[in-house]
Length: 247
Image 1: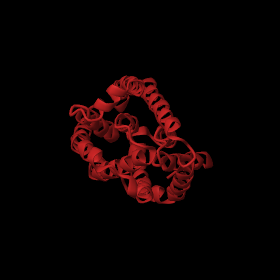
Image 2: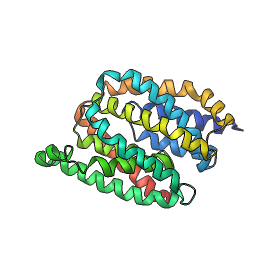
Image 3: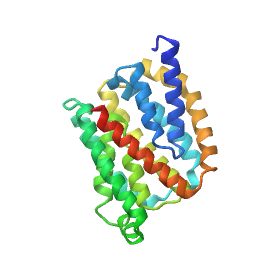
Image 4: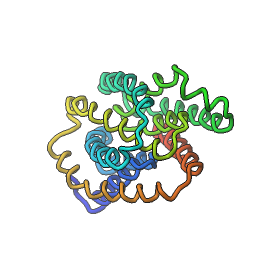
């Protein structure tokens, strides 16, 4: 359990950021990961964050349940599950700090592709439907979410490639992360990352998640589609750079 008011403040700020991240402002989720890593060891913080993410996912799925685009979701889930299993097998043998920079460079490359898509209508129309795009991005999202709860940037790039309106973007991402995070629970528990004290901490932080979801839902309604897409690109860029620098 946390020992100081500073640690509790960081934990509640992380919970608010998680709530915000589930309403479309995905890059804020990277801030939550950083904050939780300040109050407990990084490996243990991964287990502490996972139940918080699931609670926030439930809020998001309920709030945006009418906007899910299932055809894109179905494409990403099979490779994501394979990625989760791969990450689980890798976790005892590889440091997330070593893996992080590699994923960061991949995210930066994908951001460049996303910007190119926005500037080229023909590329934009073909990329999302290309059969090769979902599997590598889905697998990468599964591995990164298992190792470091850091798949937001990868999923953001995929959904931007699909050119979804902002509410469909958020609704589809909500279901994706809810499903993959629930799948991750037995894997994380088997590694000892989820336990009684961590679950009690999760329970105490639920109000922070609710505040973040409500604030994010309000902000999403105030931002236009173009601004939303560029904001997601900036968040993905920041997330990729964070993974690189953390290594």
